[in-house]
Figure: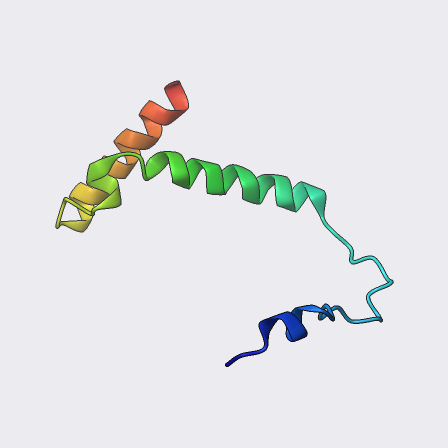
Length: 72
């Protein structure tokens, strides 16, 4: 049997994590906007399931859905 309680008694955190990592908040903000946009784009069923088989038709559907998202 696996001794999970014994393993959980000591957390696996390194002692040398005292220096703060540099974070580019502007880059994080832009990345967050892109991720949220893709999540909104996935709400369109035809886009999420790649309903259109031709690349040009799929691109047109993505552009159409993007316009609808940006207008709302």
